[in-house]
Length: 364
Image (tube, rainbow, N blue to C red):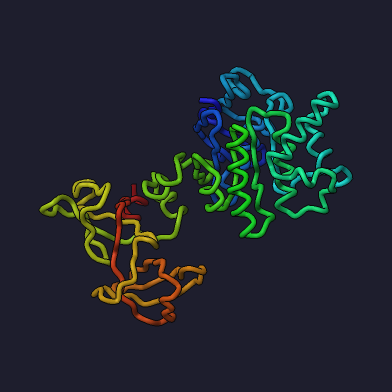
């Protein structure tokens, strides 16, 4: 493992007694992989990034890069940030306004001789597609171009690890998604190992090989995007990733194996369905994502449209069943039903995700 975090904790002096900003986080990246930390505000993802950078001291645990320990309170090791060979990219770019694009990139390799420095700057500008803008000032560039300059400057010294803290948050939505994909290509082309913090799921999915979902200082799951979505390890991850709701359900034995009774019909022949004895009397909560619910006027199951959000190619509908449960559905936007209408729906679930009933989980 190239980057290894082992039971890392971060505590601040003024935090409430016993509460850690980061608690017991363990994760790893192989060389050249891109990891992303995602979670709600205040969940500890930036504190963890700062601990890796050396800007915050670990209260416990170890940070190791390429076999070298950077932080380990148990042995008194805390390597200074400037000695860690780690690059950082911030959300505000932090470019020098009085320097040209080329000189901004050159700032990180000032120790090289003039010829080597010029060659490295040219390599980085070619990598981020900004060779034509070498002599321009930062204010003459768009926000996306400025962020690519900041990326080139951080990559110029050849860091062992690159950390990116909400690098696209100041950009508009369309540019953010496009730049996230561009940054992934740049990092892969340069073979850079990177760890990025974001609050945006689309960014996380666009950039990350592995994604960590954090909640209240703890890492709930560290996995690829597909597994996070289809095999969430906790109720929090299931609710945080994608659009969906939990509905009461019962797993029963059918002739061909276990099946699940839900408010939107029976689910059978689906991947990962637990056996009925996984829960008391088979009663559980099943996750129904918006893409698990299909608009079908021929279906006997009817639902009232309570809210609709236009997403261009589709609507995201919030629906209420006769039984009172709510579900969500992605519906093609040419099916322009109105709030207050009843429509037919059916379940089309490929992966069953279940958890103990919420009341029972709380009692435990």
